[in-house]
Image (cartoon, rainbow, N blue to C red; front, side, top):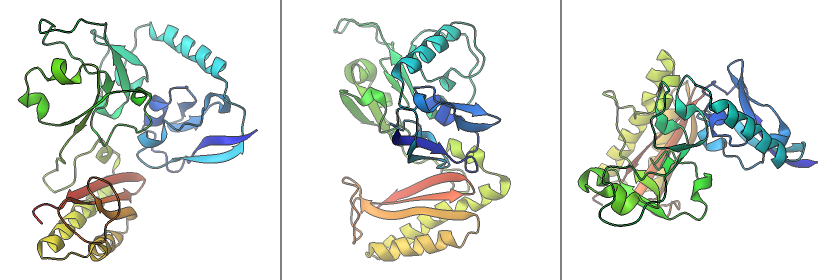
Length: 296
């Protein structure tokens, strides 16, 4: 049958394994350091793996493929669950599975925020006498820019969207707000001393690519300077930033856009609340940066 299914560009794949971890069906595995679609009938065509790929190596195609076999997928999950009962090494975040808040006898490596997980809690009665220190977080990651938009835990969920400071400002934040909600947290951009936005993707860069990646923060600074000098034409700012990035041989512009910070609709004029965002490939690694227009 002809149907939608993923396709993996092995030349773009950097071997990070994020897609294999995100694939709930077990269709993707790492083979010789590259992601590979192991079985067509395991791929449901929903593309949970796409937003996790840092290099854009995964796309959808329409081709002849075996129909999605839910029974085969469930049997594969059952076998993996049985194998998971054995002692494991490595990071628990490397397995796409639901988790309970109990000590896990495993070594942790890398940032758990780059992997999608779900945690489950035993039902507890509401009231002020609930254990104040027990985590009520029901999913991971929580950072807005890392959460996959098609994550299964969004189905029928009640959303809590919070600033990054709220967990520190409100002592009972978990019990009063997170409990019973899917949590999304807006986090500020944190930069390296040379201006590059901090990201786990920076580790994929070679020494030369790391130097070239500074073109993103330079473009952001250029845009901010143009706004500060009184430029209000969004196209002029976007063009100037794009031209600056394009001058770097190792950089390939994915997009530079000026949009309304609330609706994400493109804008023609710079005003308060406009978000100027960009995505750029440095080699095979896709990096992002942005700035928000304030005080206009």
